[in-house]
Image 1 (cartoon, rainbow, N blue to C red):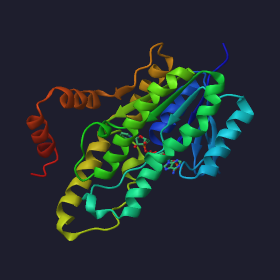
Image 2 (cartoon, rainbow, N blue to C red):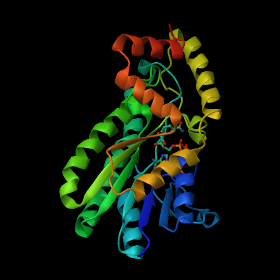
Image 3 (cartoon, rainbow, N blue to C red):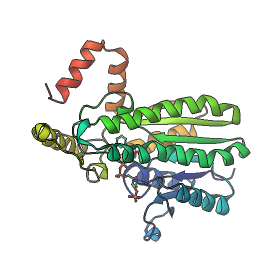
Length: 268
Ligand SMILES: NC(=O)c1ccc[n+]([C@@H]2O[C@H](COP(=O)([O-])OP(=O)(O)OC[C@H]3O[C@@H](n4cnc5c(N)ncnc54)[C@H](OP(=O)(O)O)[C@@H]3O)[C@@H](O)[C@H]2O)c1
């Protein structure tokens, strides 16, 4: 059997890097991407340049993989970023649009560009890295949570559409994972002094939780299991915390869940 060709967006660090390394070690032909491919030779897998915010860049990256390999079997939409904890009203409309441009429209651009090739192959798998915050609310992280909720609706709808074309679409939902996401947080660009105290408190709380959280290899292993699975499901949690939160969302009464969110964030 010939090795499957996998394209992973945002493979220069964190979850994307761990996934690219694991899939490469498992014998897949892996193309990872970064907005800066100057040091591509330091990676064991192929590293190519891609900015998911730019349509021309998306087209070029996919063209390159198709020119080299003739097919793309698996697309992993991983590229994304978060805004540091802040009130929703502390981000300008431009900043709100920027996070959707990468976390949601980046996925839409990649997916639209890859589907024609998968349709022609009559096979393919599209996996997007959502978050447990695509299912549960995140006070002081509303825009990030909203971008992942949008991704959940898009992906599950698309999965039903594309089955007729031999293509499956799935989501991975990690909780906090120990990556550079916390270092790369964008600062809210319209800060309001009323939130100063809570903003700083939650930022420290988030960085602490991230440093103690799962290694990105936990997510990478979940992705490998999904790729090797005979029966793909629309969504998978990655790690224990995400699974527990998903069960709470599903089974806890609304009032209890509401109290838990307030209490865990200490924003009462
Ligand atoms: N860490 C967590 O706690 C956590 C939890 C749940 C879900 N997630 C999701 O997991 C995914 C990966 O995040 P991570 O935690 O691994 O963070 P990370 O270490 O900061 O990695 C983010 C990756 O995304 C790439 N990227 C960012 N903007 C991009 C753009 N416009 N075009 C192309 N690539 C771009 C970066 O590549 P370059 O800078 O090299 O271009 C980098 O490789 C994200 O979608 C995130 O929302 C993370």
